[in-house]
Picture 1 (cartoon, rainbow, N blue to C red):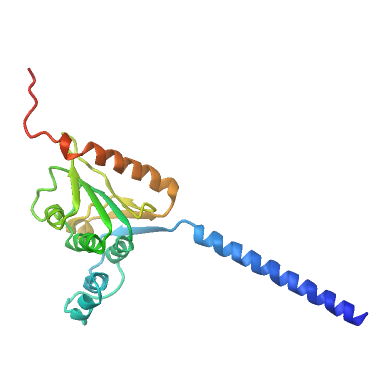
Picture 2 (tube, helix red, strand yellow):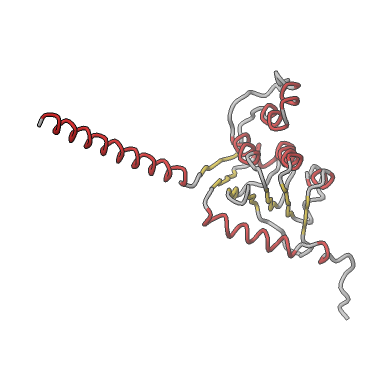
Length: 221
C-alpha cells in the first residue's frame, strides 16, 4: 500500500510539474507576441552616437574609432534609441518624411542600404533641396527617393522597419528638431497600426512615380 501511495504521489507531482511547464511556455509565447512599444521625447540630450554608428558599420570601423574622439558624453538618449530602432532593420525600411537633414540618421540609412536592406524614401519636393538636406546624399548612395509636385506639402513623418515596426510622431529628422524642439516619437510593433501606414506609403510611392513628374506647366488652353 505504501508503494502504491508513493507512486500515486509521484505521478501527481509529475503531472503538476508538466502542467506548470506548459503554463510557463504559454506565458512566454504570449510575452513574445506582445507588441513592442516605446515613446521618445525630444530635444535629445547631447550624447555621442559615433560608437553606435561605427559598430553598425562593422568591426573595422568600430576599431578605428575606439576610443571615440568625440567630446560629447556617452550614454543613452532619445536619438541613440531612435538610431537603434532604425539599425535593427534586416530586410526593408520605408521612410516618409517632410524634412531630413540629420547627419546621424542619414548615415544610419546609408549603412542599412550598404548592408543590403531595401530602403525607399518619400519626401517633400520643396524641402529636399534646402541646404543641409540628406536627400541628395541618399540618392548619390543609390537609395530610391521619390517626391511629389503638388502645391501642398508632403508633411508625413513616419518610417516602417521590416514591415513590422512603425516609427511616427511630430519629429522631422533634422538637427534643429532633434536638439532644440519639443517633439515626440512613438515606436510600435503592432500589425493593426503598421498596416495602414504601410498602405499609405505604397499609395504615395505609386503616385510619386517619376513617370508622373511634370517638367513643363500644363497648357490651360
